[in-house]
Image (cartoon, rainbow, N blue to C red; front, side):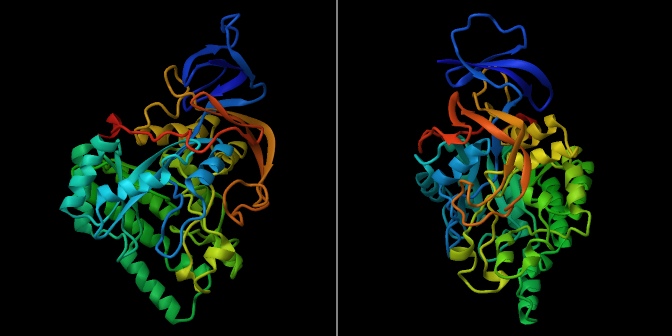
Length: 467
């Protein structure tokens, strides 16, 4: 079955042009400059007049039905992938999680069983190493060949649960330097943060705003610096800082890169649009909705401006969501009215493409850069070789995006399994019209036409550019 997408403006990470896209089955067959499309093609026609035609979004950092020990994030792989599809994201990468004392291969198999047959879009996993020892490193290394898992995640936070000390970090980074696997790092000084949390609670400071105040930007920046040093000592391990939220941490990325560190970083929509004062500062109960780590930062400092600048100038490579939704009434508020017992996470997988497009409308980033940070770069960095581009032979993951549409975000209309929205009431310029995943039209004008299980697990390569 062939499909011709015509009359749109094709936008990729490198250029924009008036062009038609020919799809044959699951793959892109050709891209024709306007006026060069062969006459009489036997193909179904999709009219993309007044739309941008872009590669489907790749969200490389999500947490569907994440087990925290006390609760699970509210989106299942089915509901979360449906929400992603409505927002123009056609690939998600979640996590298999090994904790201290656990087995890497068993954790991967168990997590795979949870997701298999559930997603409406394509999906993959990173492997969390929460207990770095000799066997865990052997098993993680084997996942590249066994399962096509080419990235691990390490935590410098959460002592006693997921935390890796500097020695464990070094051993894991040495493995990444040898294999080319990407090391994703949650960079916060967890030991120091735990002291600040203990002191805040003892002083009676339990409101949501203290979640941010006990995780200061300086302790994010310190951890980024330390991770960069360890990466260099390990022999140039590819390093990816997740959910970077502050000017200070971004400065450390910039300085590490100047020292020759093989480092990349992502930020998330919440750090570009939300703030400590306006959101965590709401107090109970509303403020609990905005507790996430890394935390929201003050609007009275330069964090948001610096992060947009970092995206514009390629100091930040990717925008992911860190989608980790918890219902406010049933989960966020279920364990008491102290910030340190609230499940950490913000839901946003459905709105990433729209929220970052606001940077285009405001002049913060170009159209091409929007596609780069939301689609092309995450695909490239994480070995999704057929995603994030509109080239012949690539998967036909294609979004027709209407820049004249307006979108009002609301929990009453979103598709996430979540009783609130962090972005409630925001009126956004632009919106998704049609979404194709491997040649199938899975969303058209807000109507879903896809079933659970049509999404495929993606084996990922070790990208040559970061070896």
